[in-house]
Amino acid sequence: MTPYESIYDRFLSKITDYELKDLIVDSLEDAKNQLLKYLRSAIVDFYNCNNDLSLRDDTTESFETRLSDIEQEILANYMVTHWMKPQVLRLENIRKGLGSKDFTVFSGANHLKQLQELKTQLENDASKLNLIYYYQA
Image (cartoon, rainbow, N blue to C red; front, side, top):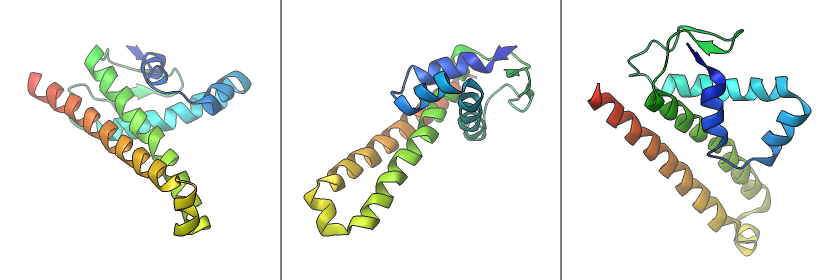
């Protein structure tokens, strides 16, 4: 049996999100709900896992099987990619509101480009780890 917390710990060690940390302090239940959303999305991405990831209990917050370290790491990496998507989308909304000339003046366009590149890199890293896992099995 693998508790979700093991994967959450790996995920949280990879990001710096003060809003999420404040949410953990203020409302642990809300924070767990948000983490579970990221985990569910990560499970969908990790379609070639040797363990059946549908064998889980959201009430006890655990998988019924013991996941290996690499399986937990893959899930945590995919959680990071799903955490990153709203960060990029939030800036895209700002860009629409300001207009291209104003946005360039504030150098937000460069920031958005860097975030998009980071998101792509994170997705590639998660996919590479998943590929290594697939061929080791």
